[in-house]
Amino acid sequence: VIPPPVIRIERYSEDSITFSLKMTTNIKVSGYVVNIYWTFDTHRQEKRTLTIEGEKSIQKVTNLTAHTPYEISAWAKTELGDSPLSFAHVVTSGTRPASPSLKAKAINQTAVECSWTGPRNVVYGIFYATSFLELYRSPHNTTTTSHNITVLVQRDEQYLFLV
Picture 1 (tube, rainbow, N blue to C red):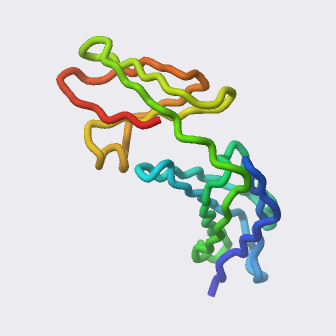
Picture 2: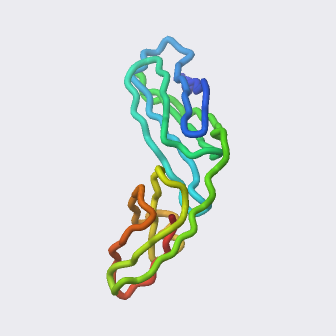
């Protein structure tokens, strides 16, 4: 039986998590697949996937958000097949930034000007869809470091926007 890998949180800060991966077996490990999940607002779950080569590994994930719960799941790729999943949970330190205040204004039938307030020197994600279900499951999205963006949409549709 292939055991799941051990995920150990080594340290974390406002914008990063450092963790180690190892196996408690003599089975040859060729690498790991790691997923890092977090929920953006209450509408959208985000995921970042890392493919890591080698048996032992220390990884640092950066560009995270302060005071946000993260779930790390990992499995090992071995000579006998894939291991079961293991999980670790951590909340980054610091104070979570305030939610931006979004204003969306139609410029014409296919363009919407989105603008918002918030801190400078950060990356904003803009998500939009024609229904709450689509906004949650598979929204259109883009990122920017600005405080405004023009989004192109389909004519004759109503859209929901989230930043």
